Amino acid sequence: MGKEASGLGFWGTVFATVLAAGFLAVWSGVWGWAVGIAGRFWVHLGGTLLVPVWLLYVLGACALAIVVLAAAVAVAAVTTPQEPEWKSYTRDNFFGGEWRWRYDGNQISGLFARCPVCKTALVYREEGYAFLREEERIILSCERCRRDVVNERGRHVGLLGAVTRQIERNIDTAEWPGAKGEGEAKR
Ligand SMILES: [Zn+2]
Image (cartoon, rainbow, N blue to C red; front, side):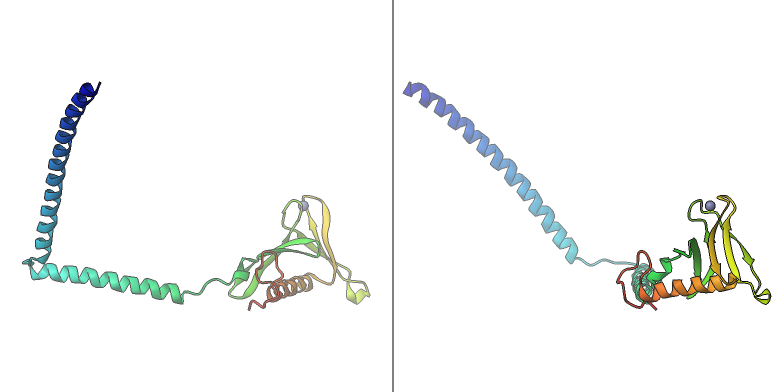
C-alpha cells in the first residue's frame, strides 16, 4: 500500500517538478521579454529626434488651432443666451377656444383660436352695433362642428387683447401649463 503510494508520489513529484520548471522557464522568458521591451521604450523616450522645421510648424499650428477651437466653444457655451422657458408656452384655452400663438422677440404674435374638439381654425363674426344701442358680441365658430365655440361681449380686436392679457398674466405668474417654479416672475 505504502510502496504504491510512494511510487505514485515519486512520479507525481517528478511530474510536478517538470511542470514547475517549465512554467518557471516560460514565465521568466515572458518577464525578460517584457522588461526588455519596457527598457527599450524608455531609451526611445529619452532619445532625440531630427524633425524638419516645417513639420514642427505644422504640428504647432495644429496644437494652436485645437486650443483656439476649445476656447471658442467654451466662450460660446457661456455667452449664448438660453431661450427662456416661457417661450415653450404657445397654446392654452381661454373663453372656450383653444388658442395658439408664437413669439416675435418677447411679443406674442400670430394669435388665433382653434376648435378644442376638431382643431379647425375658428372663423369670427361680429354681431350687434353700439350705434343702434345693441350689445356688441364677438363669436368664433367652427365650420366643421357647426357650432359657436366662443361667444363674448365686444369686438374681435378686443377679444384678441383679452386673450393676450391672459397669456401675459400666466407668463408673469408662471401659472401656464408646464411652468416650473410657480409664482416666480419670468420676465
Ligand atoms: Zn370643431
